[in-house]
Length: 182
Image 1 (spheres, one colour):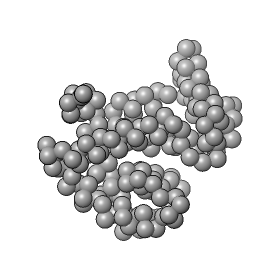
Image 2: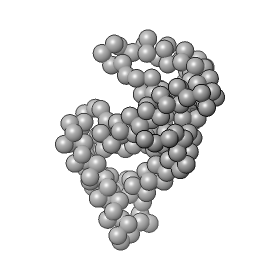
Image 3: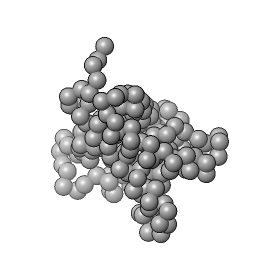
Image 4: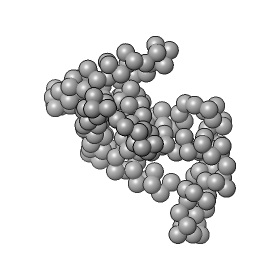
């Protein structure tokens, strides 16, 4: 909860990747709060803050069960973040005020197309989710100590740059509003 809240306000892309990791942690621990508390709630957190942290993990478990994503998939709260990012992405692409964003997207698009070509049609997702899947996949490979090919490193560098720009625009939109609200 503490890390998630911090990431949510500082970098929405890091927040979404973190939350996907939390979903996988819950699956890997078989939703066992004893394991979660022992391994993922800091020992120096006490009192009310510890209770809030524990409640947060428990609420995620209940949501995953209720939403039927115990085996795979993402919580609706995480899907909503991706929906909001997609809405902003489309606004930025169609805005003449943000040519830097469009240019960065079109530099990234060949990598997105290549990734989608490697994905079975039944598992294909939108452009942004494809980017996040790639970033998350490489994060998991790094955590496993596996080697990442130079081609993949090049693709991930460009995707990271693009998603970083989107995250920066998201933060600016949250703080200042980039577009007139109706």
